Length: 155
Image (tube, rainbow, N blue to C red; front, side, top):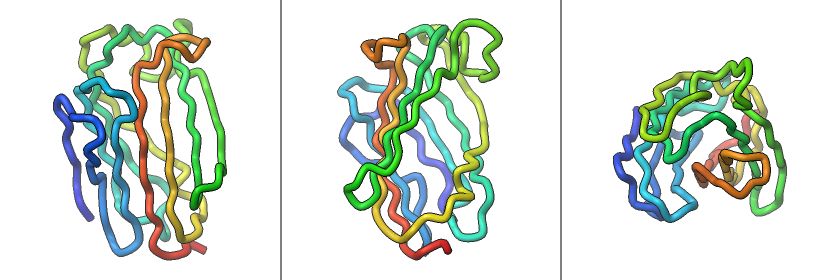
C-alpha cells in the first residue's frame, strides 16, 4: 500500500497517484487550469474486504467557503453511472470543518469514505468532483478528475 502524495502548487494535467495495489489504482488531476495548494490521501489502497476508506484533506481555498455545493459524476467504462449533488455548507449549522474557511486559510480535515462498501465490478471509473461557492454552479472553487481502476471484481 502506498501512502500519501502531496501537491504544492500543482501543475494541472499531471496525474498524481493516490495509491496502487494488486486490486486498485487511484490517481487524480485538476480539471481546471488554476494552480492549487492541495493534499489528498486515502488509505488503505484495497477495495476487497474493506468497509471504509480513511481520507485526509489539506487545502487552501481560493474563495471563502461560506457556501459549498459539491457535484459528483461517476462513469464506469465510459457510461455515466451516478450523478449526485449535495450542499455541504450553507452558512448555518454546518457540520463539516471546511465550512467557514476563509480564502487563503489552510483547511485540514479527515473523514471516512463509506462508499468503499460498494461492490465494484472490474473496470475503469472516472469520477469528476466539482465544488461551487454558490448554488448557480457558476463559481467553481475546485474541480478534480479521479481515475480509479479496479483490477478484479469485488463480489
